[in-house]
Length: 216
Image (cartoon, rainbow, N blue to C red; front, side, top):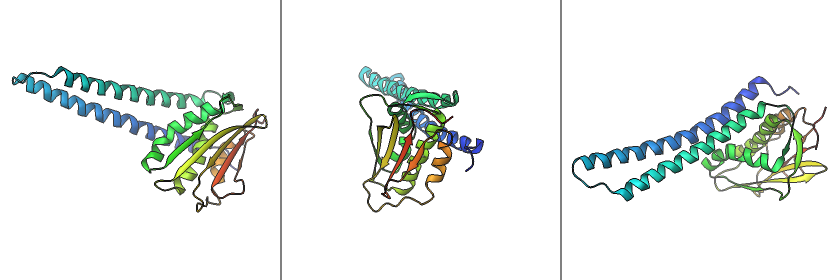
């Protein structure tokens, strides 16, 4: 099986960057609209209409909320960009999977698919390549994104497993059949991590099993 190539890495960066840039663009569009309303109020004031401080304050608050939202998105993108900084790192799998879900949740929202995530109360530690972890999890989520429809739900769970971690993906849509070749991209991203991908006897679930320590 081929290694995770520069092309595949670029595709992943492109997918995440496009998604993040759309989120930022939405915030900027709202800020532009609010700025237009503020300009209208100021123009009316120049014509003699009294300024409404409460209205101006409300618009300013809305701008502040959009700035905060965009700042969160930028920090998320920055964290993703730094996943390439090291090839091996011990991470809390629950925290990392939560972060990855946040990276692409918008794609599921656009299709009306709800994600339910369940994380353990205690850290589940595993040694991994942070970038390949992102690649494998997004590839797994993409399998379900391609198969599910509006109103469906995807459940994602992180559990401790044999001194490592299990990341499970499951839907209750019993008529869902995962494509027979769906494991290819996931296995490619998992190469070198000592991890495996399983479809545990059900067509509508998938599991990633990560060891506590990466393969040498």
